[in-house]
Length: 397
Image (cartoon, rainbow, N blue to C red):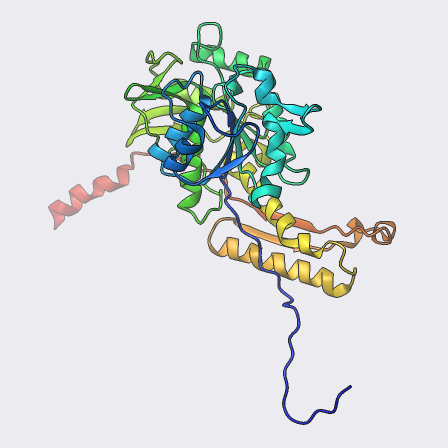
C-alpha cells in the first residue's frame, strides 16, 4: 500500500437499485404489408416512418398492418410500436410462424421473443388485426403473451368476428368466445368492429390506442382500466361497416361474458368493459380485471429487469437486503402515487429451504394490491319525512 497523507475519497456501489422503466403499453403487431422487411421486427415512432417502411394502403383486408398504423399513429398519436410483417400472404400459418429450417430464422408470432433482445423494450400487448379472429392465431398470441422471451408476460388483444358465420349478434358472442377457447386471463376479447368516416376498424386495433394513451397519461403505469375512455369512432359495425346498435343492457351483457365492447353514452363513444377473457369462468381478482392483470405483468416484468444485474452475484445478506429494500422503496413510490393501494417485499424463511439456497436459489415474496375499477357505483335514495318539519318551522318562524 502506498504512503498517504491528507484527505481522500472513494466510492462504493449504491445499495439501493433504481427500477428499470419502460413502455408498459408497447404494442407488438404481426400482419401483412405492401412492402418492407419480412419477418424482422421494426421499431417505429411516427406515422411517416411506418408508411415509409411498410407502404401505404387503404386495403386493410389485404394489408393488415396498415389498419394499425393509421389507428395508432394517426388517430391516437401514440408511439412507439413494434411491427412485424409476414409479407403479402393471406395465410394464418404465416402469422402463427415458427422456425424456418431453410433460412435458420423464426417467423411470425415467434418473433415476439426477439423484441426485447433487439430493442430492450418489453412487449405490453400483442395484436394481429384481422388474423386474431382465427382461433389458432388467438391461441398462439395467448401463448406468446404468457411467456415473452421466456421470462416476461403481457396481454393479447383478440377480436371475435362480426360476420354472419361468426358472431353477428351480441347474443351469439358468448358461445363463440367459449367454443373458440377465448377464455384466458391474458386475452382481452373484443366485439364488434367500430367505424369512423368510411373506415372500419377491428375494436382491438383502437383499443390498443386507448390503452397506450391511458397508460401514457398516468406515468406509463397500467393501473387504470381502458373502460370508459374515449374511442375514435362514430358507430359499432360489423366487418362490412353495417351499423350494429348496442344498448347499455346489451353492452353490459357482453361485459358479463368477459368481452370488451364500445358504447355511445355520456360524453360520446367509449370503450366499455373491464374484464379479461378469463371471466366469468374465473373470479380471481388478479386474472379477471384488465388493469389488475396488467399491473401483475408490469410489476413482475419490472422485478425481472431491475434485478437481472444481480443474478450470479455472491449470495450474501447484503444482496438480500439490497433487493428487499430497493423493491420496497419502489412499492412505496407506487403507493404514494395511488397506483397501488399498498405493497411490500419479504424474504421468508419458509420459502427459502437450505437445499434451495445451497443450490443458488433465492425467493422473494412480493405482496401488492392494485386498485380494481369502480365498475358499479350505486346511490341509495330514500324519502325522509323528517325534513317535512321545515314546513312547521317556517310557520313558527
